[in-house]
Every structure is written in C-alpha cells, then in structure tokens.
Length: 265
Image (tube, rainbow, N blue to C red; front, side, top):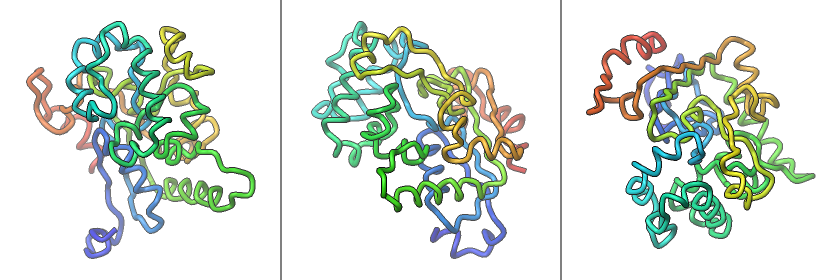
C-alpha cells in the first residue's frame, strides 16, 4: 500500500505478478487491500490451492524431496528425515496434519504449515488459519457478522480484478500437485486416518469441480463468467524456470516471449 500510494504512476492501476509461494500471499493481499488498484493479476506456478504430497507424483517426492522438505521446518518441530520411502504413502502426510492441528502456533512461525492443503475438509477448514480464509471456505459461526462481512469484503476485492492469469506446468517438480497452481487439489477423505489408509485412492479434482469454483466462494466463477479468468497450462516448465534459466535445460527467454510478455502488454 505504501509503495502504490506514494507514486502517481500507480494511480490508474497496475499489474501484480507473483511466483511460487508468492501466489497465495499476493492473492491474500488483493483480497485484504480494500483500496487496491490491481487491474491484472499474474500468478506463475503459484501455490494457489496449497501443497499436498499425493499419489500423483509420490515417487518424485521420495527420490528428490527429502532434503528439501527437511529444510522447510526444523526437525525439532517435524522431523521429515525420520520417515522412510514407505511412509510417503500417507503416513507422513497424516502425521504432518496431526502435528499442524495439535500445534497451531507453528502456523505463525513457518509458512509450510499454512499452505498444507490436506484432503480432509472438516479439519482443514477450521485448523488451517490461512488458506481456507483466502479461499473463503472458513466457517463463520451463527451470529458472527464480522466473519461474514469479511468474506464478502474479500470476494469483492478479488472481483475488482479485470483479469487474473494463472500459469502452471505438469513439469513443475515443487508444487504438489502441480494443478494447485490452477486451483486443482486432491479429492477428499472422511477422516484424518483415511489420509493414510485411503491414500492411493486420492485423485485430482480440477478447478471447475472444486467447492471454491462451484460455490464461487471468493469470485473465481464470477470472474470466469465475465471473461476475466485465464488458465495457462504450459508443458516442460520446471518450477524455477519462471524466473531464470535452469540446469535442466529450461530457458526463461522463450517462456517470457511466448507466454508472459503477451499478458504483460
């Protein structure tokens, strides 16, 4: 707000661009900032619908993600290194959910707990303090007029956008599932225990079939119906290639020229 308020070049609106974890954070800014003038919002490989290591690419996580996950939170809070390959098939994910629920203060310290979109909606919608709020699926108790007002306010602020562009790639090796960047998620189970026992039954739910879209909780469906929602699925783009060349051969310049430049101008 201070940046945009102190420069006249933003008076007629501006483009807001985000990458990775900046995706949900920037969307939260849009929803909370009543006086924003964002005309076009661009999310590149953004963690828009949270993170959950499901069966879709679990082998990739087993092979590559151990050190990465361990770097996200201290082992004194949650020790990823204590889990073997067999535990990636639901046990580790279930234990992580239980830790998050039993240690709510962890969400105020490490963002990895905030973006955990586990597939048991009842506990997720109440125990996660961040993502359900900005997806507008947090529960408002009867008589909690402030909660209801804030939901309407956040949706109205999101719908001030003229355009929203969400970019994703099936080659993304960090966003799990990669469809989260375009508001996909895993299917739901009935209990936390079933995160482990029914892990291999989890399937991808695409944006158009999610509660957030079908119930238009924060404005996705309305924005789509008025022609302002753009979903971009691009092949062979690794997670960090959205901002720089990568050793895997992914080049930023063609990505920018072919896909990003057209929506920036």
